Image (cartoon, rainbow, N blue to C red):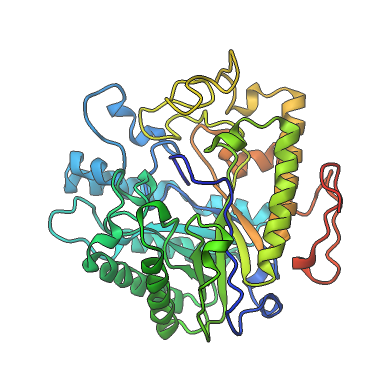
Length: 437
């Protein structure tokens, strides 16, 4: 999940030159749930984000301590205390009950973000280890409840995007040293070995989450993807490889030519709260913008399986610390941004993120928004909602939203959208109150 402004609300990549990776092959796999991925992210488990579980960071609120991410969390506490606290966190944030609930809600996949430090920590790094037994426990539960999993390398050495969700807020230093790339591959080897061990559960391994093109070399990203592909494929031949679009536009990838790749998914992330063009939309315009997303995803999915790996129901950035620990929101002007004030005069964050404060009109809109996005992303190969749950921010909490009727339960129980699959889900034709084709 992204805490800083993005270059665009949605960017998808066209890979027209792959061989052996057409969407028609896709129907044979994706585990127990069929050909369309419908899943959630288990965010905040193995990579801390202050906004997902504020209680972990609350003791530093208003202090001078610079505790903003997992790096500074462990650096401040020291390894012994950090290990103690994180073991308690790892054992309680995702429970068997959570996994059972997700299965009962009609989902078929979970995406599990994890940092490189679970596999490799060198001198001078404050990170602690011990995540793997807890990861394997989650996979055991997934097996029990017939869910499949994507293992997502969410943070790499040096940081691939400078976001707190990479493990270290600040500079984008991933490509500055070959050692960082090598250690990223080392982490992927660890994930691939787990994928091979749980081959009936793990469908895919993601090479790296959200590499930020504004701080990286495109060729460097491509070279890393090539190496990641062969590394994972050698260890777990049947696993799908997931590559993120790096926030690049389709034209930027016209010259990419990788012959022989197969069983590859493109991951794109779509939010409506981190850039002005989406944050300032009316409710109707949020729905209409999602129609365009559907057209884009369907188009790109004809070249390469395209999955929307992150999305939410948030239409404000009011969730506490969503933009970083101790930071405010663009919505009410408490975070400095290009509008130099709130999105409209008098805009407030009061009640924006709590289901209990939403009136019937707001609840109805969120149900429509959920269905519109599900329609859009199923014009591709499916989706993963961010996040499975949160401590405070209900507009990001799939379990709570579904249990309160604001997200279809199961996902196919849609009240507003009316779509037909025409025997091929990537040719989905949208026919809803806000989309007409």
